[in-house]
Image 1 (tube, rainbow over the protein chains, first blue to last red):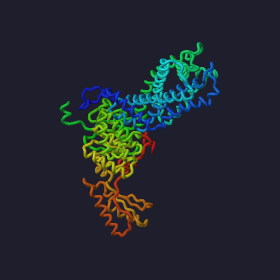
Image 2: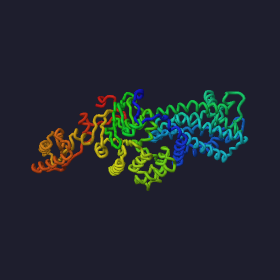
Image 3: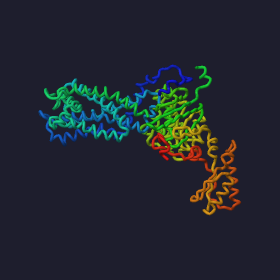
Image 4: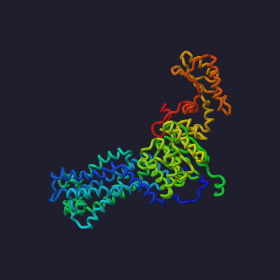
Length: 286
Length: 348
């Protein structure tokens, strides 16, 4: 690039802002987001992780495992369960965007976008917006499925609002993990692999389906500090479901589930977003 | 400066000393290019010669490690957005969006060129018509045939009426009929004054479409010129005889050598004899008609000798012939991907 420094000026070049395309960032982002949403609508099978899968988990755990698991302090397991399944599904939300990015990189769509006069960040932002909208889908499906199996909310409107707000905030954070993943892992198959080897266990070594007090010591500590646990616990707390009353002793995350979840969400965005953008830039350079 | 550019607009493409390394491989090793406005230039070379890398650098998809390049006067490194505004790119695999309809594909590109939704839609309809895709405009692009995908891809590059078109192996993977259709479409574009840079592995295609042919190998330009001058370097058309009976092959080889003036390549197994239509050194400036003259002379000589011949004709030199002449070895595909081997000795 240093060779460019002494290049003669272009005959036609006149002083103009280098990022003349920046002014179109929002509209370009929206065009690419709309494309992402069309993609989702036209391959519903790729949406199964946001539609059928969470509903299946609700039914499986409510009716198959539910009877075998008891909630400490009493209460309905079905009500305990919902916070966990919300949390798990939101964590899985990172795969939608990772897969979409990875597909785009592999089929040349990214190259096409990058040959257009748009800010390159609009491509990432478009994917992020489409997937944020997508994340409303499982939250809605699970709410309905939960009500059908007997889940009830016992808190007031403000707490309910806070609970759904927290889900959206965490979904947004997970999208950046997804962007990072989609830029790091070269193929869609690789993304699937990471899903099963890394993220799947993360959502299970947590208070997702069982109270952490039942786990052996090392796993118990991991589970207590796992953000999936704190998101699940925070939702239980805000919905006033069983397992939702923070203990007065024990690990800090257990005592302050909402604050700890927010710290994670912010932390993920602050760390992952720049890393993701950098990694994405690198992945498209060559 | 404004005055000067009004008188002579900058060339469509000018590149000097482009170098692009991938690790210790030099995909581009000092490439110079000069394409005038309205010209059609073909980059000809085998897989891995650096054609795609050259296109990626010129279309701002990748940064050169050394050298400079301007497209329509805009520097690809310093002002990539300006370059992107004036270029149309059809990448090697038609990158149409399979989950969007033909019309949606083109509308999206138009919107990203900031035509506005209405104008983008109108332009999409217009281009679909021009590329005979109107009937398929509401179908998802993944249901298109290979030829239709290429046409849609080409239409997508034209949405914003670019000044310079880059087509990376536009006919690779097409059956002969779809390829001919695409050539016709490209002919129309060229007749309309488009500036085109295309890459190809086929001398025939470069010959058919381009005014200037730049032969690349291992990231370097090894020859340039129009098709005729390249063919002259290779020795022009080839005389090709397939003899009916194996015993006659040697006799025919002597006849061919007498007509051609050059030692023929004899393949006893295939009973074929191949030689330049006329000795390379003897081809006059307009070598075009001499293949036919030589063919006539050969037919007459064979008839006089009374040899039974199965097939007799002129064969176009291929990319392999060009490489054989220019580098003394056949065109070889580099490793998968676009990079070239560090040292060609490795491959030998």
